Length: 173
Image 1 (cartoon, helix red, strand yellow):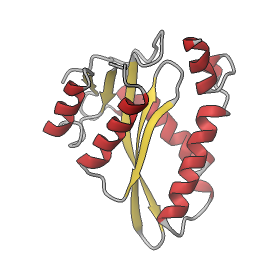
Image 2 (cartoon, one colour):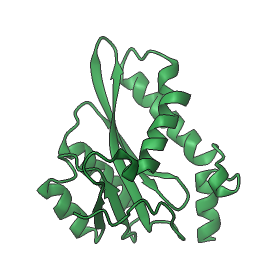
Image 3 (cartoon, one colour):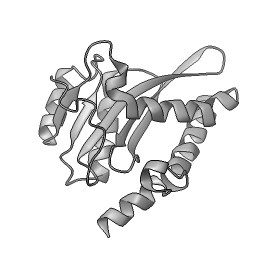
Image 4 (cartoon, helix red, strand yellow):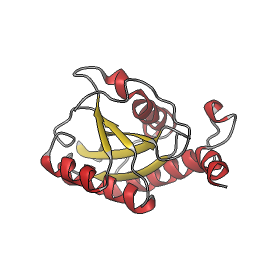
């Protein structure tokens, strides 16, 4: 797939452009977890996310299904890196079924997916790095709380001081 997004990280309405990726997390005694998220480039909202214990195709596909279920009429450009989940036949089929246009970062250019990388950076700085998680459930609980905060209460300069969902609600009103 081509890099159709080409670092044009602005959108004029919700559900035009989404960025997606997976980040690695740890909990307990060297246990691994993965956060898959999709971010809307219009308002910066996290439209869907899934936390799993495996970085596999199903993690990414479930995130995509959640995004589509929450936004059934959306047919966005969906931008990802070239990870194996995003180059899989299942991902290709599901994005085609949902009439989404795929876009992929150039090899080794994480800056091509900067908006979702930025979200993961904020999440780690403002939440994840502040404590040690003993259990998967404790980690998921804090991720749920942080993403709620991020979408509903975390003001963003790019949104003229509005939280992402305030900006989104203004657009659809």
